[in-house]
Length: 421
Image 1 (cartoon, rainbow, N blue to C red):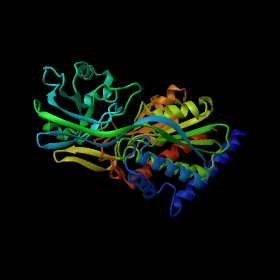
Image 2 (cartoon, rainbow, N blue to C red):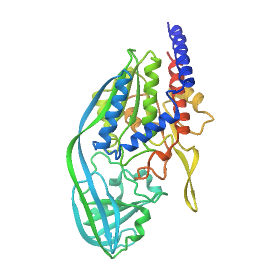
Image 3 (tube, helix red, strand yellow):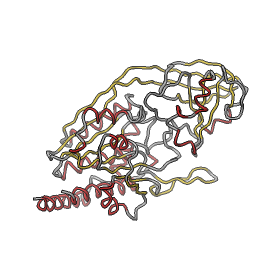
Image 4 (cartoon, rainbow, N blue to C red):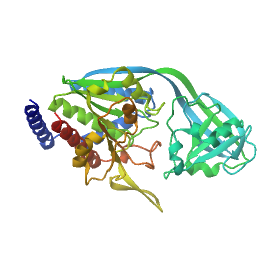
């Protein structure tokens, strides 16, 4: 029986794959994928439960409905901060700042003396303290509560903290939050390119305006098929800014795989999950999905996760600034459970991607902790210069990179399912 099923599936997949690749508007066409990235960027800011996030989930649900999926929203409560404006004025310069989440104080109007806490050992009490995180602090970047010198400033009654996170683009690179994190004083980030304007001993004016609201975030869940074993395909949909390179490729390829599955109809039940709240509380949307809607680990044949920045251009730092290269970043990674090793080697050997065995990153690290043992997923390189910045838009990727990557992922899924019926 298994042999018959395998032959059937190989024939069906081969027939439908050929038809798609030869048609005038194939499912995995690069221009079509790029159009989805651009549409996602055009929705605007994608922070959890904002207008841009809600427009994204409605757009995805509508696409999946039209493909024949049974869809639903999975709602969950979030206390969200809605920023209206934020700046710091030093002498005659007004500089942009970005509050560090979770925000406890919606509105701030503060005049105080600046002190460089990395250089000066003087008292920080009542002052705005400046602290820097370097690239080698990467392991702590989303876990500031573990940094002693950060906690020291709060304990010594600084009135506020200005955080400078080093990156090659010189931009504000927003930081994700962890469960239980909180700050007793205002903490804001400033772009490294603007940090020279922060003159220690000078009085500065910090102004922040916004509102804290209890709102409903939502994931999109879509199902198709009637097989006893289930395949999960997931991608995050939320992020700090427009997230073109960070989220866009995952969402575009998620859409394409969903369309491909609706056409080929492999003998499984497919569950597509688009999670919000990625940037909050260690991927809160994934926790909610697993706790409330996910199939049990023993019923899941495979989990495929389309993470951050895995189909973007490579960048090179030069004396003239950052140069974008016309190729996918070779430092991107595919990580996988050991039982996927044969499939991963066959699909990705001799490709510009790093393979990580028995590793789970991002939202799949959450799934692995819950007992999901058969998986592979994708994530971009560390220190992408535009990661979590306001300038991360659709220009971070290209139709060529998207199409090449999407076809590789389709091939990996196809090979894995055909070989293990």
